[in-house]
Length: 116
Image 1: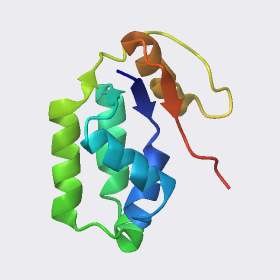
Image 2: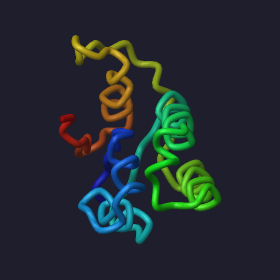
Image 3: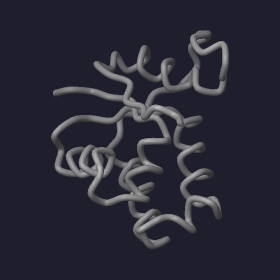
């Protein structure tokens, strides 16, 4: 099965637009079409960002739906420690956690959305 690591911006985009590609990716994961890997640092970022006021204001999901998504990720995602020392993104070292999780879980893809 395909294994991915999802950048937080994919989940944010999915919450803002239920018909876009990020929402379709999330739906495919919920239908067990691929696996998501994450580390404690990624899960923490998901929680912090998805429940932040700017995201909540633009979200089409209720707070309980977001809470259910986080719980589903805790249960169904492939957990990795996120302990590997790796520097990949010079412009934003906080994004290195996604590549660390990808290496640790032997993910096939890191899925992100272009920032504009």
